[in-house]
Image (cartoon, rainbow, N blue to C red):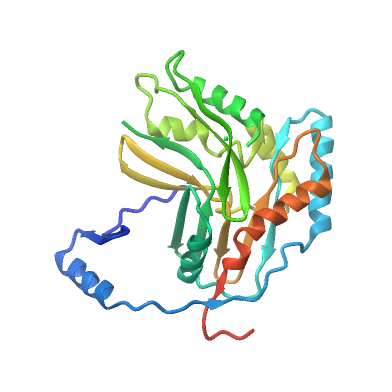
Amino acid sequence: MLSLMVPRTEVVFYPDRITLTGVDKRGTVELSALVDDTTCIEPSPGHPIDTNTRASEYVEQVEAALADIRAEKYTKVIPSRAVSLPWRVDMPGTLLCGRQHNNPARSFCLRHGNNQATGFSPELVMSLRDVEHVLSVKEAINELDRLCSPGTVVVDDLMTVRPRGSVQHLGSTVSGALLPGKDAWDTFNILFPSITATGIPKQAALEGIGRLEKHPRELYSGAILLIEDPETWDVALVLRTVFQGREKQWIQAGAGIVAQSSPGRELTETSEKLASIAPYVFAERNQKD
């Protein structure tokens, strides 16, 4: 599913100023007055989150994934597990606190219908202007070769350690010059869903995830797009995120499984990733325990 929205009013926060842009002068002026009068309210911390719930189920997922790899169904897959939260989440408070303790590639806080998400993305799917294991980098090169002029695809950095809060994130950047006639939509169609959240080959890994995971991922491992014009795209991968629907709220994380993977170690990796956001999830005020 793809949902695109054009904001009526845009508020941009800089270190030394706030700018507002809107299509309606009166509404923009009213919002400006609201921003001027706003006072900061200390968020209400949530209860400690046990990130090791349902651990045995995830170990079984990894064991099943390893069996698929031995059967040569795919070479890498990223199964995930969700941890439910028993209380409603204060999304703006979570963004405020989490952003103070994380240094993500991108952060976001959104509401779409009854669905909300606040996240601290460790990586981009793509950035168009004027990815963990070497296997993923090789596959990214293969994907860009389908889009870019011959000889222009390069690895700008390989396996760089990028601190992301309490987690050390291993990332790489692959770039290239698009072929004539190719645009951002062609690029997004090839690169999404991200191989760093699915696996290799991508389609086989997606089918494997469908078998391994009991519930749809919804927005998890999806993407948040910021499109300023046809030549300026920014696409953040939805990881390290807390989700909230009408009746449930949860956090979710996965780990990359290859032939040499250990189920116990991959479980620990998901717990480490969940721990990078769990301490900063704040509860809505005035709710019963």
